[in-house]
Image 1 (cartoon, rainbow, N blue to C red):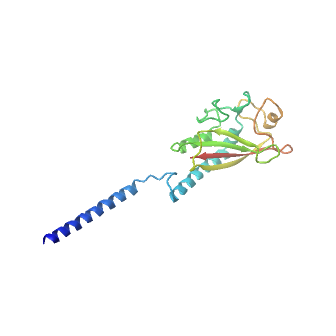
Image 2 (cartoon, rainbow, N blue to C red):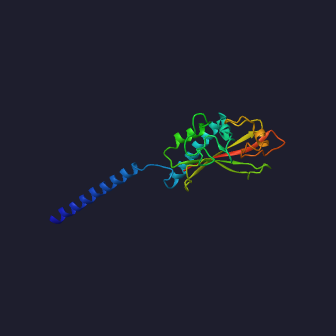
Image 3 (cartoon, rainbow, N blue to C red):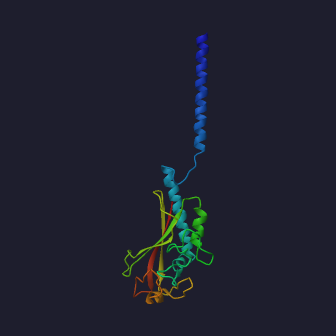
Length: 206
């Protein structure tokens, strides 16, 4: 009889222990926070979602005309030149959102949407004077260096000769190209065409 009671006690302890372990596992699963750095399929899905959001922001900014204005917001009074809203530490707009006077729509969207991420960079890639894509890169926003989990979204903008710089200097891009004091770094890639250059705007989020 004593042996039977002991066996029943062991069985009851094992049953209670398994319930406790199962409860702990269920609680842990419900507590997992899904982030872009979570490994596996969830990571891929989260990265794809970030890429879609960044692409949507670029598209919205381009369709409103803000993206092109942002590219042409150049300060010609400085040498070698910089974006007009730069903080002076780099060519780019810096890690701070530009003032309201600047065409800052894309940056506001990025900041509001990805404020819980480590950071984002915005980089321009433009063509050289022969129309080849190796013209160079121009940093617009530098928040740091992307990690391996960084996501890249891009949008292509065509600049035209008759478009004007959108900061204090009101010269057209063609006029700026012809004058040595303008120092706009993106060159005229198509001399015999109304097209000035084709610029790829890249947003890198990590």
